[in-house]
Image: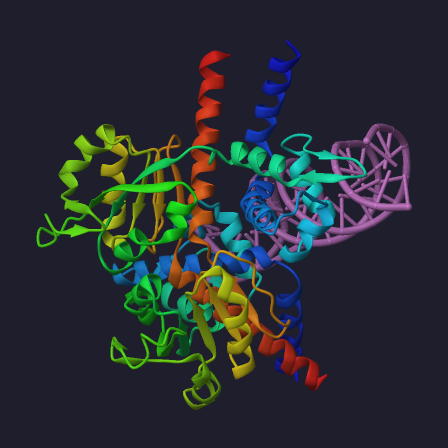
Length: 229
Length: 229
DNA sequence: GTGTGTGAAACCTTTCACAGCA
DNA sequence: TGCTGTGAAAGGTTTCACACAC
């Protein structure tokens, strides 16, 4: 009754607008984890906003968009808000992932604590290079791409982390999707196309450095302008 | 004369609005590099837009914001636009960087071709762990953080890549900044605060996976809704 | 008093549609 | 004709300011 109605209107809205807010939810979750570690039970939007360089109003708007988590005059309960946000983000349960590409970057990602700490478990590793086949890293044996079809369902791998060269990325993505993966985190410096039913997040490390170079250049240009004018 | 006026008004505008456009310039540059490799001399906004999933109008607006690079009825010259964008982004010259944190992730970044290919050179590596001191990776000897002060000016290191744990990130950032670095690329899952004169770009790998989990969850919720309603 | 949740206003970004040039 | 560059419109996001709940 009321419950079903609420749920329906909520999820409809979530899917359609306010994309920007969702990008910040993980940041809020990080702050809440920190606050819990230092023993804080409650927090205000202002306290949450400050270390992130955001405005208090923005935090309130973002959170209000997903529900009523706070108490007027008091603030937010750290524990409650934390588990609410985990639910919204879908990280209130573990996720199984495949790692495809066991080169330099792939091996580093395999050992990266930040993934495991946040509930993401790499359960199988793949590489097209036969020289790597049967080698083991972090207790996992390197498999050929042909094994995707069998292992994705068997190990219930929902996500795939792609650490392969740009020219192989699209084909590898296609094979992972065909095997049943529904989310891709790609580190290849190229755009990946996928059906609408598959979520894709791209992290291009070179592009981030370029963005940094751009900002430094801009800053210098502004400084020159100021000292000149 | 006219030149100085133009330049002034351009740079004023660049620094003040259209932040979103600048985030896409690197993507355009990637496409242009690909087009050059396959021997294309000209490209239209539509052709540039398609593989990136953007609209042609957006490409034209973004580019027009930084100058008049195209020719009506013809399109853009691949070579000209490429070097223009390199100039805008500040990547028409090499950048020297320090790598701080020579753990799992740090070593992977040190060997990452994508940085060198785009003109970013890691010229010195640092770690606080004395057990690593004097070890060599990719031809570079690991230095203690105390050496920042001396080596940043000597090797003209403008950027620092931070691959250190969250709890060390802010202090390491402070020391790098004090030593003279003007741009930080941080991989630590925490916010970094820095003076306005220093540019900071943060890449939080765990956060990217969380974003992916969120999108997959959303998609599933929408599918349930559709098949139910 | 304190601090959330929220309309309204301000601001920014994207899309539309077309004048104008090759 | 083909395609850019750009005002105007539409759409989305952030900030403001305050009613209201504790």
